[in-house]
Image 1: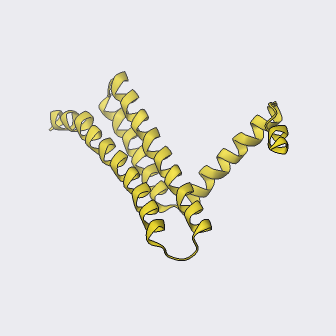
Image 2: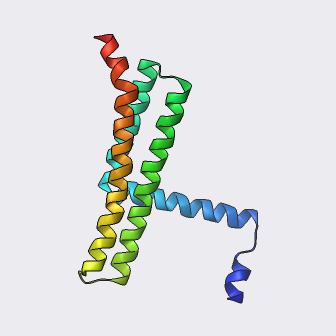
Length: 129
């Protein structure tokens, strides 16, 4: 325990190292997780449509909060899958439950984001028709 406390000292170097580890996690997710690429494409579409349709400041805020929640949940799902794979190399019913429920959390946030996107963007698109 004492060794771990020594490693937890605060310093700029430690902060920068932590930041680099976070970026490594993002790089891994975008390189190996197909869902992250899909989320990135959706983010680009949201930004393009948001600029084109001139959504309000509050609508931008909601979009970015939801984007952040979906991406963060996907990252937690990816890390949970890695831990399950590490600790349970063989297929196990509890491992499946852990992976499936983590994936379901991503699905729930994605569905909420999609419905919110429809509420924000659909009326503006219909106005143009």
